[in-house]
Image (tube, rainbow, N blue to C red):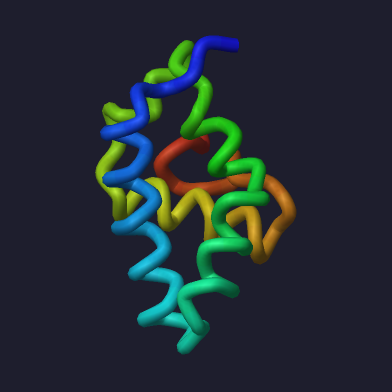
Amino acid sequence: MTKMIPTSLDYYNKKVIQRIMDKYDMEQMDASRAFIISETHSMLENEELAMWDFSERAIFDMWEAEKVTGDPRNSVYLRSE
């Protein structure tokens, strides 16, 4: 697996973690841990999936879908209907 360039990954990490902190009133360390160990983050790291085409709002939605349903692919941004 080829990984996303670090500066892009850092951008998404900061933005998505901030959204998690704001919405779920979590401390930074807890929000960071929740995002970084997620399948969503693994998908984001995988350069072959080209997740940089999505906004940080979409990545957050994928993480939230994973939190609720267990699968980030249940996000409205990834479902094919």
